[in-house]
Length: 439
Image (cartoon, rainbow, N blue to C red; front, side):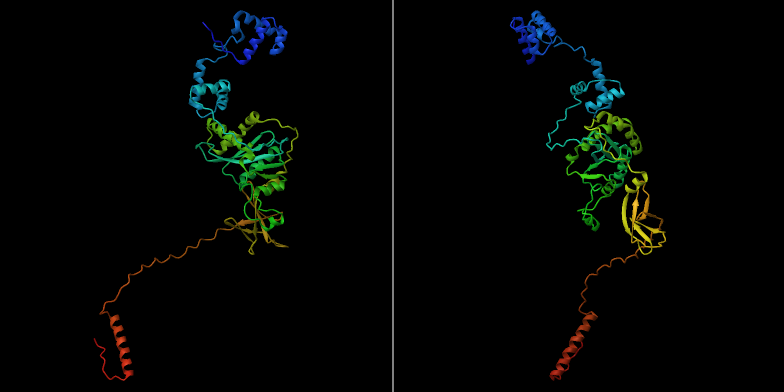
C-alpha cells in the first residue's frame, strides 16, 4: 500500500537537507546554517527521521486535537451570549465586551472563526480606494481635524444628537461632545472646551459647511480686508485667536475624523446602548468617562515630542472672542432691532453718538450690546401689538347675463328713440307725412 504524506514546502526543503545529513554528504553544522536552526535541533530532526521516516519531519500534533483548544461548552456559551447581547457587534468589539462584562478572554480570530461557523458573521469586503497619501503631522497640536456627525446615537431612546469631534492629526487623540445641532454656537462652545483642556492648536482642518466657512458675496469690509467671501463666525473667532482654518474639499482629505466617526457609530452607539443612556446629559457624562479609555486604546506616539499647543487666553477674553457678533444700526430713538426683538439703549451720550453698535451673543446664551469696547445697558421693549386687518368682503358672485324680452320697458324706450330720430330726419327732408310713434 502506498501512503500519501502531505507537507509544506518548508518541510520538504527541511527533509531534503536532513536526508543529505543521513547520507553523510553534509555535516550537521552545515545543515544548521542552511535551515537557520541550532545544531541541537538538527540532531533531534535527524533522530526523528531515522526512527519514523519522512513522517518525522512534520509536527507531531498534526491531525490531533490541539492542547490549547477551548472546550466545546465554552464555544457554545460564547455563541449564545453573542446571539443574546451582541448580535450586531463585530468580532473585535464583541471580544472586548466578553472580556469586560463576562470575564471570557478569547482571541479575536478564534471568536471570528466561531461566529463564522455559526453563520453569525460574514467578513465585510472593502472596495479599494485610491487617494493621495498625506503624511501625519509630526507634533501634537500642529493640526486638529474638526467635524460634526449627525447620527441617531441613542437609537430612538432619546433625542437626535450631533457629535462634534476633534482628533489630533499626529496622535489620534480624540475630544468630543454631544449637541442638539451643528451650528456656530456648538462649534464655538466645543472649541472653547478643547482650548481650555489642551490649548490652542496651530491649525484646524474643517469641511465647507456653512458653520465653518462663509457663503455669499463679499461685503465692503471683506473687500477692504482682501477676502473673496464673507467670514463665518467660526473663522472670525479663530482668526482673532491666531488659529488657521483650512477648508477640506473632499471627505477623504480629512479622512482621519471621518474614520473616527465610523468607529464611533459602530462602537460608541453600542456602548451607549449597554449603559442604557437616554438623555443628552447622561450621554455627556458617559462620553467624559469613555474618551480616556478610547484614547488609551487607539492613540499613537507623535514623531516629535514637541507640543505645539499655545496657552489658552484668560477666560474673560476667551468669552469675548468665542461669541456670535452682529452689527446693527442705532436708531434715532436709541433702539436696536436684533432678530425679532427691539432693545432700548439706556446710555446718555456725552460725546460722539455711535451710528452702529454690535450685538454679541456669548456661549452662555446672554446678549450683550457694545459700542467699541464699552458694554451698554439696555432693556427689551414689549412687542408691538399685532394689528388685525378688517374683515374683507366676501367675493361677490357674478350674475348671469340677462337679455330683456321684446315687450320690456327698456325695449320700448329704445323703440321710441329710434322713431324720434327717424321723424326728425324726415322733417329735415321736407316730408309732411305723419309718423306714428305708437305701437
